[in-house]
Length: 206
Image (cartoon, rainbow, N blue to C red):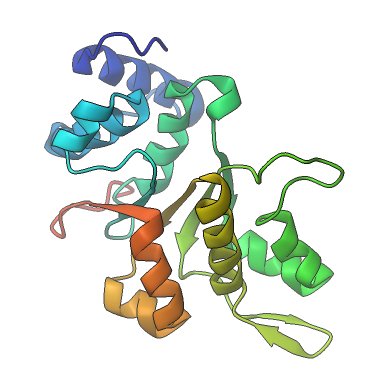
């Protein structure tokens, strides 16, 4: 997808076409979500002035929040396709990260917060989907707030190398602080642009 011009209708048509390919012919983007979509498309377009007019900092990642079933996961999965292949973030469920910690221990945390083994490159960009649905990880009797540790480690990569992290969640700011602590919440303010679906957004799965 070219970045030179910002044609919102063209972006919408592209996302709907890719959505039908991934999720079936029933897939549609709701017009009520267009203001939010315009903000997110401005971000992935990489046009600094346009993103800044939407209140977004291109250096930070996206924290997309909203009610269950509003389309956070499918939207963020599609938006990555607007980026050049080398810039696309990987998508990983927070629950899967927790399960991996249960099997492998702290190697699982390193996998998502450090460069690939044998590489001198920076860590990969990731979208961690559904923050708050994971359980506390246990490995050989050791309990760990897995996503809290991942976010703290990725904060270091963000400060050192500008590594981006993206999140989806239906947690409120207070619930995030209660689940992960003030230290994580404080760092998240530096790492993320907060973009929210309206609280009255309907469940699109119904």
